[in-house]
Image 1: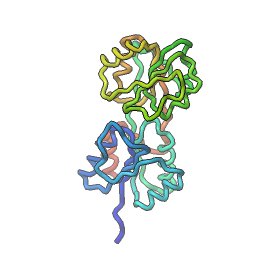
Image 2: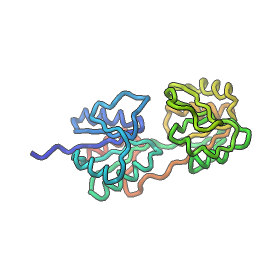
Image 3: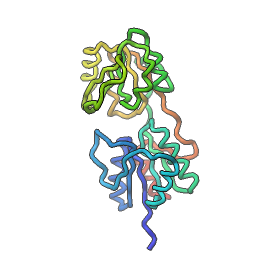
Image 4: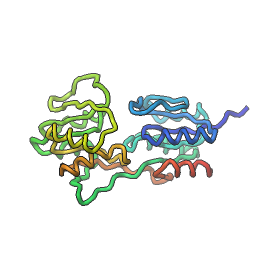
Length: 247
């Protein structure tokens, strides 16, 4: 008997959770893939592979073994390597592919943003003597090796497993969600002069930008790369579900 075709959801963004719930309600065969364990959400209610793929061939072998026919890519907005790997595989094998990507934040006249292409560019753009705050995460620490400020406060949502690799780094443990007023109080307590963040979009982590706006703190805003132009990109779970229902 021919195996049932599977919809693969690439997770990483919070939208993946609502998407999977809705697909299960449609009685779809769904599996999920995550590059690393999630810390802020419950586990997916479907079989889930956790861990990065070693290569494009490794992903291709896994996808074919699981009879994947449709891929909805709801990975993190800055997981560019995942997006490129999966979309190119789908192109080669004539599989349906959709990128679900929430809109980026937009600057207002009250915001003091400077747009930069990478974390490393942001680290090199901090003035001497500045005290910067960031939530770009543990994996971006090597990009701060040439940090030009005085102090870098990096948020960790769980207790760090090791000490910071650089003397100028201090970890700040906190458990989201954070309100604007909590962020303002934290920035004031730490004497923050600059904020470094990636433009992930969405309301959930907007509070730090609202705090920076209220305190007139300059923001080094790391821009996204553009998603694959050869595939459809949608903003919302509802749009993704409409696409999935109309092959």
